[in-house]
Length: 135
Image 1: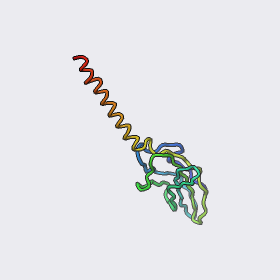
Image 2: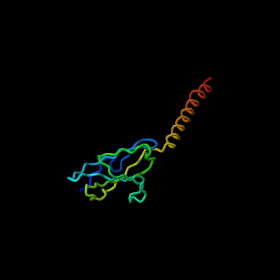
Image 3: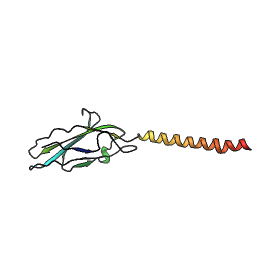
Image 4: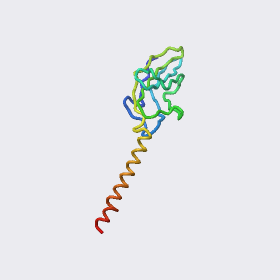
């Protein structure tokens, strides 16, 4: 069968904002008289030496990771191949890369704490300390 076309997450995109994410992977349908299933791999390296998720026998043109397979903040790669009813494979597609999350959860918490401290300092400096200066 021909190789499917990967669509989402697109190459070089960012998925999610903070913490672990469960992206939906989408691709074009491949047709074959004998039927088609898909194999999906997600890895942390472009050469797929460290595969995190390997799925076979997918029959739909999308797959959403369950919470148990959520991806933490970082860089990931995904690829796909179609397999017809006679077990002939299309070969793997060219891998797409994507980033999971804008910040790790600890970074988001640190940013919130920093903002709260900064607001507290500004309130003290302008409201409390400034009032003493004018009294």
